[in-house]
Amino acid sequence: MQAVTLDRKIAELQLDGYAQYAASSQDANLYYLTNFLAEDPFLFLRSGGQSLLVISSMEKARAVRSSIADRVQAREDFQRDSRETEGDRTTPTMIGSVLKECKIKRLGVNADFPIGLADELRRAGYELKPMSGPIESLRSIKTARELKLMAQVQRASEKALASALTILAHSKISGDTLRYDGQVLTSERLKSAIGCSLINDACTSEDVIASSGDDSALPHLTGSGPVKANSAIVFDVFPQSIASRYHADMSRTVLRGDAPSELSDMYSAVQEAQHLAVEMLRPGISGAEVHLAVADHFEQSGFQTDLDNGQGFIHSTGHGLGLEVHELPFLSKRGGLLEKGNVVTVEPGLYYPGIGGVRLEDVAVITHNGNKTITQFPKEFVI
Ligand SMILES: [Mn+2]
Image 1 (tube, rainbow, N blue to C red):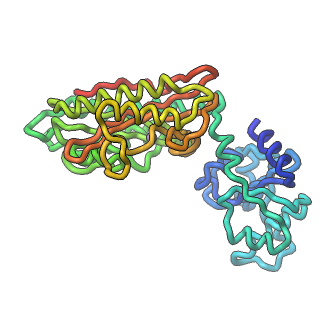
Image 2: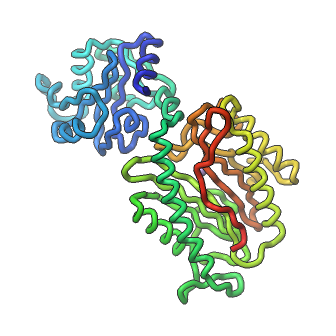
């Protein structure tokens, strides 16, 4: 289905094909097109309704077995006549041979196609046309299979967060610090509990946010040192499944001890904002409309939404989620129309230096007439 849409775009732009050259471990679009994970760059070419993958001979058998390409060839097949066996000219020469064999003159490429390669291919007479996000927009509509894989990562994420909350719930309050297992409870300890649970469920996470006190007022500070009692603790878990490469994304804010009224008020406003946003999510509404409604709600509740002063609601309402943590579509000032199959986070937050931060984040899939929440984790502020 995705390939058919790509073929249509190729035809619309009167191109002979579409190519990418990258390492799929670093390029979600290429992974999406091939379902093949490699640490070294390889060529993907779509032309004449067929997908061709050109890769080192050592990787060929693996690509034949696990990629979704119609044809896999070794790059050595295209370098046979080349006297340049070393150095950076071998790749343009190899791609040139592939294009020649496939009778391609006008080639569509993604906007981040390597510029050095593009220069060489243009010098060799090929016309390269950068296309703006053709694969990104395909990726933004999830299939039933993708939704199932995303729900699996989300369950692992919820299990991981539950393990950290169990530690918190069993910690002893002593002044404004917490003690667990005879030691001062730290952000590092909570992050390690989350990380271990994730790895046991075959998910990786470059980082996890478990920040408390003043640290929580900076949305992306991951937190370090002792966890504060009677203060907001913001968790944000965004793991990737090792097998499927899909992500989950979830934030919760909790507090151990007594909640100051400022934080309770912030929590209520954030919870209302999230509810309001989720109620709006359906095909045909724009991400901008949803974001502006959330900002309006905060203003009406007496909170600021001014990005420049670093206080109040200082980020967008949400983002698409999939093979990347942040992808199309966005629930932000410039967010476009939502479509059935989009998967978005809904994560309003409020941040005040000296008081702390509150963020709640769930993931929803846009259905034919509304949306369905993928996240199943409870929201409980004081624990
Ligand atoms: Mn997020």
